[in-house]
Length: 626
Image (cartoon, rainbow, N blue to C red):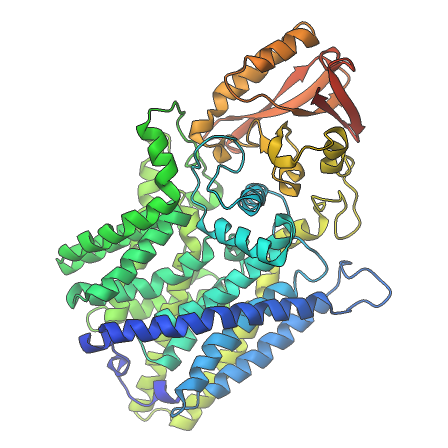
């Protein structure tokens, strides 16, 4: 398996391709392979998901009941696929075998490790809790319409980059699924496709079999917490190979490859602003280290127009002078964001790889371009963390914890390259015969893959719990038959608003499942961090306070008609002894938690039967303006 990697003593046996290999024909071949790899990986992933969803692991019982059977099957699949990968990599004269591993085995591994753990639920990791409570409405909005729109506020230019969600909307339309049901297969398919694409990207800077190993370890690092953010993982996974490519191009510029870097930076801007800023920071550091600055202008010239695919409407709104509030999206500092990530000190397989990778980078820094590029990438991650802490007196952060998946992948990749260098050195100095080196490499590959795959189950245990126990948005029941006391609020709204589609209604509700179930517009975002600055969260909250002080229903209706913002058509308020409650959040950064909840209390008399159609749904009163 490690034959091509253990046969020479020097790291220089797998150098970056010479400039001639970076000709447009190489990029053209890569694009052609990608045109095949992406649909093949997607079809394979969907087929495997279809198969795992139909497994009967608990005859006569609920497939969602707690069980270790999915974990056992995950381990089996990881062991079998890692053996297949190891055996296939022994082929030296059949590049198509290696390509098949990169395009089939890696996506299959990614798909099975996630779909088996989510067997028995239609929700993805995290359910409808936390960040998923924002991602689901965003996907729902772009499933309902292909036009770029804010997920919550009607008539407001979109603020959050949403390329992945726009593509997901087309995926949901193609399969004729509601957005909340399409989210899980779209997320898993994305992660599977990422495995194949990362293989192709690594193959731009190293030979095929090394590229498979680097793509494999990158894919494995994505099985943990990184998998909960499927919209950003593809970009995170691609940063390491593209950093190595950028380092090469700064020394031997090639216009076509610079276009690839510019396109990637633009895609980051169109999907994840933080990653765009970080990768731009990495490129600047690389340019400073190489003392080559001209290429940055070419990269930016391509990246900016691509970024405007998502940012264009918001930029135009700012130029028109539309009022806005300051964004508080960066006002978040969990404990993980306050600590420096030191994966090389963790007692895990990835921790050991990170330690080996750290040592390899330090020892190979002078002679290995790969070590130099990965060293700059990891150093940039630490600099980003420290800079974020330095910005705290300015009442903001750079959300450094969100970059940890990219850093973990870079450390792990460096660890694999370090192990290969050790094996080459042992073989080259005749301290280990080549056959034994192959055996050691094969054993490390299989054992490492299985251990990382099975340990990911523990890392995402809480997210799996939400996936199984959160209520389905359209039914009010969870996969494990738990019942939301409010039932299906969307059905209650539909009963009170006959003939009106969800996209015609503005709803005031703090219940996340409402906006995940159907593309209702929201009067107020659930958290200020998820609120578009053009939506003016604080001004809307002040308006709610004013409405709650109205003397009677007529005064309330008059205030609703005269509102600066489109007023709610539907109110969903929690009934308490002192009135109808609606919870709003106030940002108290850097306190933990960063938000403080307060209640706005509406007198129940404001929603009388003469002016509102009402219904009780569990603890909530649903009131619709006539």
